[in-house]
Length: 225
Ligand SMILES: [Cu+2]
Image (cartoon, rainbow, N blue to C red; front, side, top):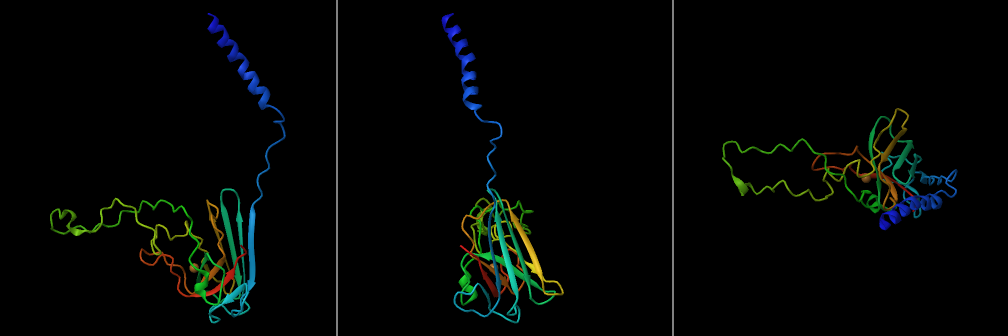
């Protein structure tokens, strides 16, 4: 009986204590949402010079004087990249991506694509047409072509990793006036800062063997660190 009484007492007091501690200044003190972080760069393309922000490597495709702007906005949970350009060839497709390194004397200096660390689960692709051995009955492991259990490793041309969900692709088709723009949004933020935007000669491919390939790097805009 004693124990029961004590227990009841405790139970009836505990909520009071919690309430008393928890209700201080609760009204009107909603934590302000963190303001989005914005990184942006604008540049006028010209032949390479040390320290240049915007470099054209092929003035036939990205004429000197073309102007590009990129703006990256990140909240705590997602990101949005906006790209606009003027002064390119009219009615033409270009591949555009964020890359890891600042621009340099050659297109290669921009390094690889920015690739998000946590690749999305490969889409449950309509199972790759498994070559059905025409008449050969159960050739077991003889075909040697990998049991389907292991996930595909990341590779420069693996569409499971090199895709616009896992990287930042901003391909454009210019209008008749040579302007173009693109927006890419992702449900993640950058775990490393991309340092450049690269314009390629052709639209980005997505095939199993050539995912991410967009031809020559014809121009580059350096982003601030
Ligand atoms: Cu690229």
